[in-house]
Structure formats: structure tokens, C-alpha cells
Image (tube, rainbow, N blue to C red; front, top):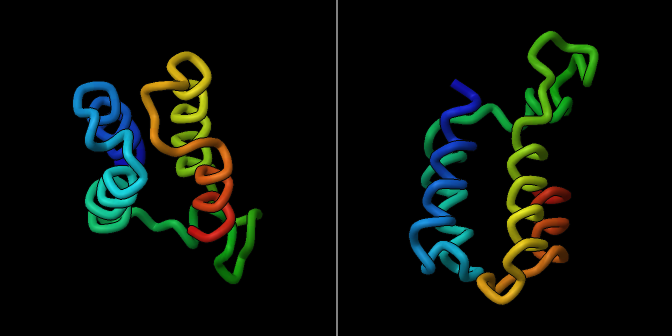
Length: 92
């Protein structure tokens, strides 16, 4: 079920300009990643077992990379930039 939020977030980014604003992107991550129940701590390797855990998977980082790829293709469509994505990646 880790892939479902990725697809939903990317689809909504493409379809709704609100989610391409900084506030909209925060709302989108909150509702489709965090509230959906994504295990950020385990997937990013911050659990006790660390990245050696069988639960480790860079799903959130893959999502942020996909958003960055969209920003490269359509830079004027986004209110936020790569710095915001780096902030999310380091504070999630």
C-alpha cells in the first residue's frame, strides 16, 4: 500500500493547481501520506533496526523525487521549489 499515496499525490498535483502551491502541497502530504498511515519512520530507516530493517524503503523520497522531476518540466506551474522539497525530505 506504500505506492498508493505516491500515485494519488502525483495525480492530484497534475490535476489541481491548488496542490502546486506551498500550502496545498503541505495539505496534500498531510492527507495522503501522513493521515493515510504511511510509516515514515520505518520506511526511512529511523526505526531501531535502521536501514537494515526489512521495512526500509525510500517511498517518500521517491515521491519527492517525482515531484522534483515535475518541477523541472513545468517550473512555472509550482509555487514552491526544490528547497521546499529538501526541507520536507529532511524534516519528515
